[in-house]
Length: 477
Image (cartoon, rainbow, N blue to C red):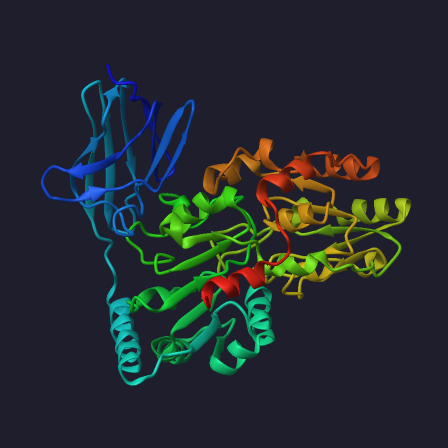
């Protein structure tokens, strides 16, 4: 009797997990109607057995598996029963997966038809692809590097740190032809210019969602590099949110063009592969460039106990982003600050355009610095970080900052956005659900700071604050 046994199969987000004892071997799905294979995203194997992960969103040639019946090929016994389904249909497209697992066979039945695209989008696509392809034909791409963003006016953050590392190296500085395309208010002229520059480029470097990048087919030698502005993998994003309101389409090209993605540590590589719809081997655990400077010895700019209040936004993206300011009692907060000799710096997410309503009478202890693009510029001044679902927690952990989590809408946020790990077990600090409890935790300095060290070790294994150097070495080796 075989020692290799499958004991369970289940869905999680747009992933199918198959678990068992023994060895997994050459495990994969094959379509009965066609000679097509559906391979795992990753395997975790050890003495106690194996866990195999199949990516339903992007696991077949960086896209959802085609329609048909797919049967698991496994050299061993199947000792599991399960019938389940997932429906990721959206925007007129259909994508449904049915799982049938019994003692003889594990099979997937997929039904897929593409999302409908309106005429305006199709016309814009034709124009931009014509510009891109013309540029690609007539241009000499060798040694051309494009830094670009459509959410920033100028280069900053991870892109700036990688550029600075390139410019330190005379051989690269003299050889490369570096170009830039930045705006925080994209229009069709910007898209035309950027399409032309993309066609000219041998390497493209971004650190955020960048829709025009995903429209085009690139030659195999072209490197599309995603530095991603956030550390770690906290709340779900990209294809990890498939089927939720405001998520990507299941047959979108978003993110899937990346040849290189750089992340904070080994523990989060699988989450980024899932979110971006790319193979694990395209995701590199180097650390995050904008964290490199956190190792610098910096002095606080003041002697007051400083609280950095930096929550994320609500809504589905830049156009609908907001923060419910009514959940803040600025009068009570200001009184607490005066009582304890504290001050609060507010840094709202860049997507939030509405200004925080701080009255003149509180401007002695409450300060709004939301105009700063990079929160790391003021993180050293913080004695306490208050956030909710922001990835700022990773940078704060690197600096051993105590944290409080003001999560008045946690259940709603889980339902609409969700997290890669259970929120209550994952976050490195005390969780409070109402403003009075938040004030009490601040007053008593009850931050549960003991959680920070283990969080840092898990997410930044052996981090030497040299991410920019590692990334440049990989890209230009």
